[in-house]
Image (cartoon, rainbow, N blue to C red; front, top):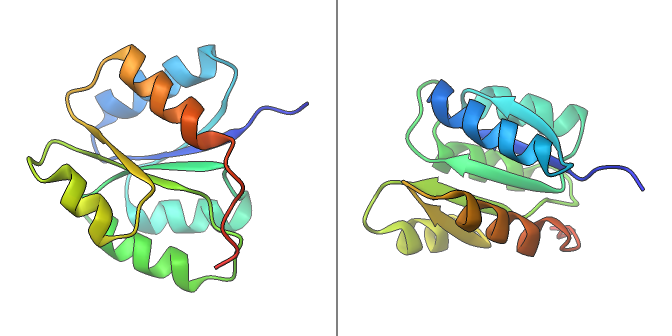
Amino acid sequence: MSALRVLVVDDDQGILDFVSDLLTDEGYDVAEAADGAEALTMAREQPPALILLDMRMPVMDGWQFADKYRAEPGPHAPILVMTAARDAADIAADIHAQGYLAKPFNLDDLLSVVERHARQQPAST
């Protein structure tokens, strides 16, 4: 069985490195994008099983990415919002994300949420 592909989208290189290293060690195939535009291109080229999405980024933010990604032909991977905002649940609901991970997060929180959502069937819309 091939490794599930997780696309991590964040403009903070430290977070990208931390999440990527951890998920790679757990057997996931991890792709990294520093903004929504790069993530959209990557998702088209190699569709992920799960997207971990920061919201506040340059070039294309998380809201713009989610709109453009969902406008693409499906199936669509579940999106999990990664944010330090106090209203993380509201932001996730606003973009119809399947969940959220509040920053700062720990290893167990990250692994738990990724495992729970990475094996979901992609949505066809």
